[in-house]
Length: 176
Image (cartoon, rainbow, N blue to C red):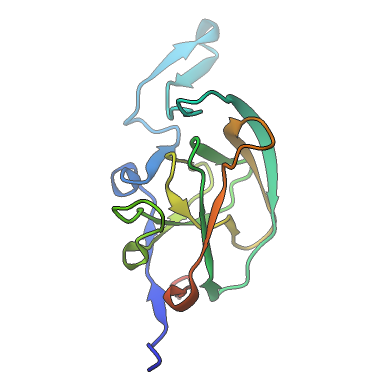
């Protein structure tokens, strides 16, 4: 028997709503900030914690170039990074979508019944906590570059698990 297609609603990205999955990175008056550089800069301090895991590794900085997706789109795959966190900060003011799911209690698969989709506005980054299942980048209107801070390690280390959604695939679209 075929199930009807599941459509995720798109929620605004807020620190409270995203807390189960990681951290929101943004220069907000609600976070600790202070003036530096003789009054010429404002530092928004410790917005996210880089986790390279207990087994070593190192924090690395990369740039990802995401091509825009065509919406509505079917979500067919989630991934996670079991050895460290992964932070994305857009280098433009473009919005993008963030799709996440907690892990099942046994840890080997995502809880697809709890999939959530957030709309991140330009100026909002995210830091996925270690092991959080998420969809690859979903740029919206145009290509979008992201500064990425995550864990680097030996090439033989397996730090990306993929999970095809199969019958649990869902659709996402922006509200009209």
